[in-house]
Image (cartoon, rainbow, N blue to C red; front, side):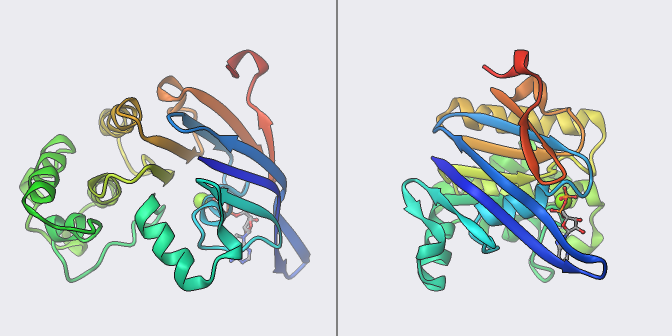
Length: 224
Ligand code: ADP
Ligand code: MG
């Protein structure tokens, strides 16, 4: 489903060049739930944006469903991303003038009656019922985070990439989010989550660790 080869991404910094990703290669098979843990600054967001077709690597290649992302034109890459990937941004990226229900529905290609019913179910499952008609600016960070997840799930993409999807949540709501992602995976979806804690581990089928831009098996005994 996802494969990347020798990904390198550098950024210019005052003290020279920072390698946010330093020769990262791995694959995620269809139906896996992979969690990547790493400290703040280890390259998690850089990795996810690169895999999601939003950040061109300095070198190396990303392929999703057999498609080499960065050999597509920008327009083709955007269309491919829209149809294939549900992306949960670390900073949510909600549309400020749409309410919660409209934000979630905005991710759906065909907002027909089925999609509307699906969105209403997600709103209930994620505890957003009382906020369905609220604008993002009136929500807590934890509520916005759940809206961002609901938007990714609502379009029923084959792949979900989630950047610290529980970063603003209490343990109870974090459990709700990870269980919902695990349900999606059991229904045939593929999930890749990056987190700074290890709270995704109980839900993941495989766990990796990112350390200063380099990927390692977290503990050999944990890798199936
Ligand atoms: P994480 O998500 O794990 O906290 P990031 O991927 O955001 O880590 O960042 C990894 C490293 O790359 C950090 O040292 C960060 O400062 C640097 N970095 C990320 N994005 C940029 C950018 N746009 N410009 C300069 N440096 C960046
Ligand atoms: Mg990050």
